[in-house]
Length: 294
Ligand code: HBI
Ligand code: FE
Image 1 (cartoon, rainbow, N blue to C red):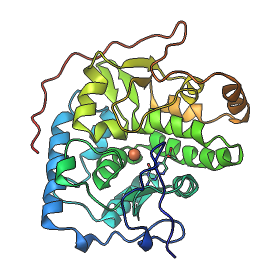
Image 2 (cartoon, protein in one colour):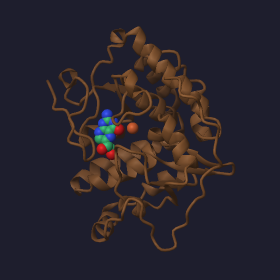
Image 3 (cartoon, protein in one colour):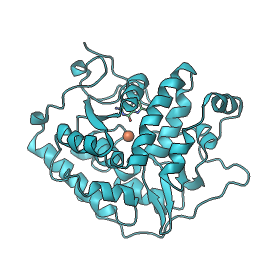
Image 4 (cartoon, helix red, strand yellow):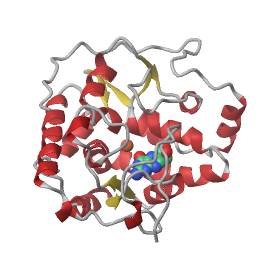
């Protein structure tokens, strides 16, 4: 059954991908044999460049998980990753043609199934792409699914998303996803580290999010994040910093109904606004830029 493609965030641009191949739950076949040698080579260059960015920038949990994942030489077969992931945290990855509607997305996460886009960006998009491609999803999102606490947070997020639908609160949960799973920072004794997939799959935003003096870095607070909109086609103006993944998981524990009511009656905050008394994190010291190998 052909399914309708979706738009992403505020953009009305139709997403890329062949949705005619998708099943009713928006999953599809990866068709690994259709990738070209040039695509495997482009993916490997993206991977090798980001690998060199990780020391001192990616959180330890990400670096530890990436180690055993043999996903650097070519676009991996999703089934091979799922075999390892099932044994580790009972997650698996499923192929999707691209962005999928919130309900399908939350339903997959609630079932410990992470949707990974099958298509790869074009060479001219080496440094930046707005929509998630296979490199963003695999390199950015999958490693932390090997971390037990983060894996449980992602499932709790999916379950929460299905409840949010009934409460017309999807935009709030999209913000929580954006400022944690996509663009989250974590505080460590060695300084700030990135755990968000949107940061870790982007050479430019990895350095920018941790060392630039332009954006502000604030302590993560659930209701603060739910009140803060985001932009999907540029680096962020604000990043939110957690102390641990347990803090994230605990934030999803309460019943969100009263939280949505409080947030719904409070004014939306400007993307780069600051609440009275909010503590700013200083950026990390600059790191030697990794030469782009594009
Ligand atoms: N679909 N494939 C895919 N990947 C995403 O990250 C994704 C999505 N659909 C919706 C979505 N993310 C966001 O709106 C989430 O906040 C729900
Ligand atoms: Fe993503």
